[in-house]
Image (cartoon, rainbow, N blue to C red):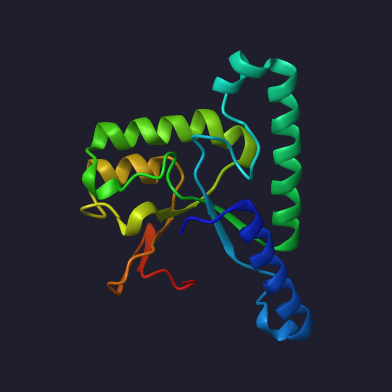
Length: 171
């Protein structure tokens, strides 16, 4: 699912052109789910606080302001912003403490820019071992409610607290 900023812009332009020609394609204004990582920043902006020491607080603050403008414009247009994990890791290969560290980093570094997200697209075609127990609770307690996989093995789980699909219905 890796894409460059230029190819992402092109994909959104293609989608918007299609919607302009076929407005009935869009249900209640929804567009697409854009899943982002956050370890280097978001939408091409250096929003990770580690950049403060390299470029200064004013630079960092401006990057955050500009990234928030992108987020607001995308949401206004009907795009859903989702997590693609904090650092593009395959969660199936990680233990609960490592996933908790990812969630903490997301909360500290990305949430201030994106706001809350309720959807995760698991990176690298992965997911978690089970949709109950400690690891699931870490993700659920962080506010995630929609768990999407980009893999090729079809599966859907729905219960009172989650929706899990694989592959993602948006693939």
